[in-house]
Image 1 (cartoon, rainbow, N blue to C red):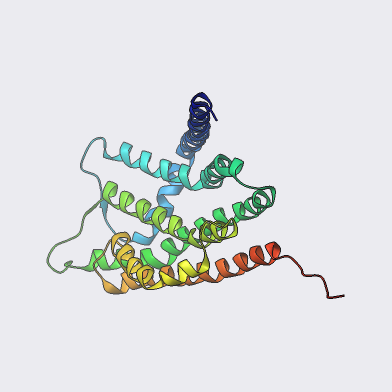
Image 2 (image 1 turned 180 degrees about the vertical axis):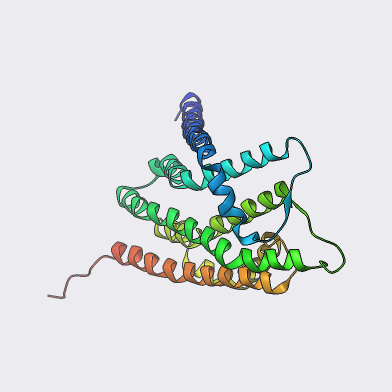
Length: 249
C-alpha cells in the first residue's frame, strides 16, 4: 500500500473516532440538560445515605457547581449504553461477522453491569462509609459537611464502582474475539488480587479496612467470574475452529 493510502487510513480512523466522540458528548450534554429538570429528586436520592447529616455550602457558586456535578453524573449514567455502543461501533470494522453478532449480544450486559455496580456502591458501600466518616471524631467536633464535597465524593465513587463492575463483560468479549486468553487471566490472579485491594483503597473514601474489604472482595469475585466466562467463550471459539476429522474408511 502506498504512503498516501496509509495516511488516508490513519486520517479515516481519526475522523471516525472524532465522529463517535462528538456523538457521545452531544448525548451526554442533552441528557445533562434534561437532568436539571429532575435535579432536586436526584439530590434527594444522593443525600439519602447521609440522612441526619447537616449539609452546608459556604461559597456563592458552590450550589451551582454542585448542581452541574449531579446533572453531569446523571447524564453519564443514563447515556452509558449509548457511549458503549459508539465505542463498539468504532472497533466494529476490525471484527468478523460472528464477532459483531457477539458484540451486539454483549452490549445490554455492559449497561446492566454498570447499573449493578452503581447499585452496589449506593446500597452496600455508601451507608457504612458515610457513617464511619461522619462519626469519626464527632465527639471532638461537630461535623458540618459541605454539600459540594459530599456530592463530588459520592458521584466519583458510584461512577468508579459502576465502571469496575463491567470487567467481566469486557474480558468475556475480549476473550471471545481472541485478544486475551483464559490462561493469561489465570496467571495474573495474584497480581489481580493485590490490585483489587489497592483499587479498593483508592475508591473507598475511608481508611476503614472493613469498607475497603467490602469493595475488594467483590472485585476479586468479578475477576474470578471473568476467568470463568473467558474459559467458556474461549473454549467455544476453539471448538468452532477445530476441524472435524472424517471417520476412517
